[in-house]
Image (cartoon, rainbow, N blue to C red; front, side):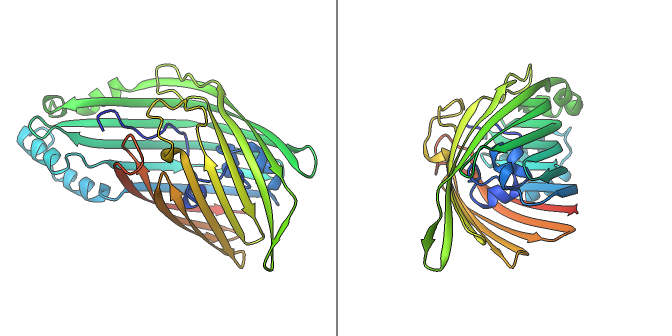
Length: 337
């Protein structure tokens, strides 16, 4: 637990995460810019998503925020008491905006996200572990159907990043200039990232009264610009996916970081994502899956002008699946046309 951190990423889409994070062989919307650009050949129509707001918080994060608001952060006794109440409990919060345009074969978007993780440690001499990342940038993806079976795609992202990963002692926290210290300790960087993807579709198969379309996907992410300067890097990783799709049902399986380039650990179950989505009457989406061994649940309201998504999932913050989960809840609201 002393070195455990979640895998590095820029953006996790609420729809993919509702499906257990399994999206490499699906990627048929703007999320393809972060999962597999080859899936853009499956986008059916032009769509613009404006003013999207995504908010995410961990299960105990709201209570921790309320308690923190009552603390005098220059009083060492009060701060120590607050930290001791939350020893070993992970707290996460994030806010994201991701306006984008999608159409068959093409997607373009801007993104801005701030993610923060906090954990108090050491009951006798309380400390606060802070890991935060802020990203802002632009992404452009294009896909081409080589034939009816094979699609290939690529996208590019320019990312400006600021990250902070440090542990602070009680005297540092109560020094009176803690906000300035956090700002000074943050590291800046930027990079241009290239992702390459492929999607292969097999012939349809009949199951009961349904016709399913099996397909496999592969993506290589964060080529060229994975070194983000002084900020936290975004390592190159290879992800594989398999999906069965019908008009209403999608079932998907992913294995991420095939070459184990993530330095956090080499645990296999943490790299597995399994999920499904059922779309009713083209208006309501019900999603469920398993992400890093923990269940995920999602719901989407698919409107012509209003989009609403809800999500619950758990992130493994230990070094292996099943060690220590951080249950999180997310809400997304957007306008579109």
